[in-house]
Length: 100
Length: 486
Image 1 (cartoon, rainbow over the protein chains, first blue to last red):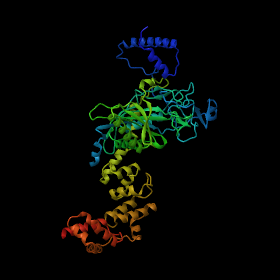
Image 2: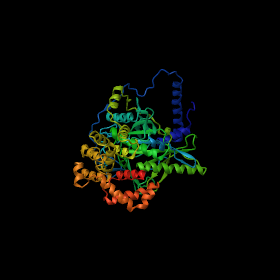
Image 3: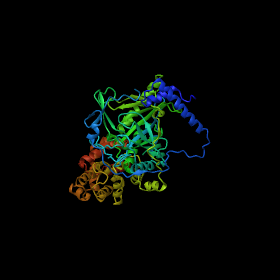
Image 4: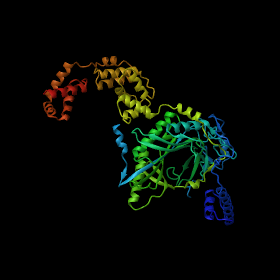
């Protein structure tokens, strides 16, 4: 295995994704991500000057709908499915900053 | 345009200069959301305009609203941007007002790039990009102190706004004074309304301004910037930038360094406060949105949109300024164009009226009239003609105008006659001036000795004698003429 990514970087990505990894899982994810980055390094090594970047596997553009109002969901039905609702709205625990 | 000089000014403090770039989010005036068919409508009951896509329910798929793309193109073209092939990306972060845990936003390939916006003064601000994205839901923080996030007990979420189409317009860091920033926001707002892209109501949040503020010594590299959020009026744009710039100068002078962060403008205490340290773009782990394909408007579509654009505020001001002999950033030109009454002034001129007088009257008396005044242009034209002919003084014209406005029109000559406003004949005026000169002999002597201020007492005496009916301009002219002949 190569070490294209550090376990610290993987831990940071895990935190951003709100994933809680055990030490073993962190090691495993680090190995797997390094292998993927190896693969991208292989692609990087190719001469792809003449190849257009692919932004989507479907080679189509401009799939759009008209600006027409469609049915909405029933609020009471939706809020019944929420853990807690109040005053026609979803009630959530106090929001902490993105840093917290 | 002599007033242009004001805009070459740079805000400085202790030798530091100000550098500002603005990011403005505007909600587009579509019927439905960017990726789904529930209504885009402000002020409805919470969570009544919701559907599986705006709630981020599993399996729900976005479908792009054509009208949102078209309005983004209108705005981009009005800002002199190039419309290009664009894609959507996922901006990943966790926040309760965004149930998918990502915002769909244009990232490295926005629809509009490389434009500019000219301020009324002629100062040009570069536009880096304008990109489409979806709005988030609205959080209300309950408990704690004054509805702020910090210290609140819990939050309530309304998803009516989730998925409403936005364009974020990013300026280049070309702005150098708080006044320019205010003029930029004001002009952008006028353009948004003119092209029908947004109602641009800052008080309702359909236009939201974030200011990237930094300071530097002249000629130095750009300083570390802070992003100031929650700037909810044009007035607070100026105040927030001014405060933040002074804060940064104070820190640098004290030998401290500026930390790149997002700050919150508090209208009540007039300060900015740390909200959070700035995230790296990498932290959002952007990647191509696999559920949407590229948007690639062909030349035909772009040109159709371009040709449907109305005459923009800058061109309208230019026309009005030329017609009335004003500068494009004269207050009357700005105010009347903003009210959409510039065309009315043009029609008064076409009806044989005096454009410059009409501009003054419309600015002063038409504040309640909207963009299609109910008073026939010919009526105002007649009033201005009577003024130009000297049949009515400025004071009298104002009174006649008030009646015309109150009556939704009216014949200026008939109203003037009914008020007993008749042009004073010359001999009557001359004898009143004789009277004024003998009553105010001191003032007359001073005036003859070259003291221009002394004229006020003489004109005042004539006005008093004529009970305000004398034409101030005529009195001034006669006084000057008599002084020359003494």
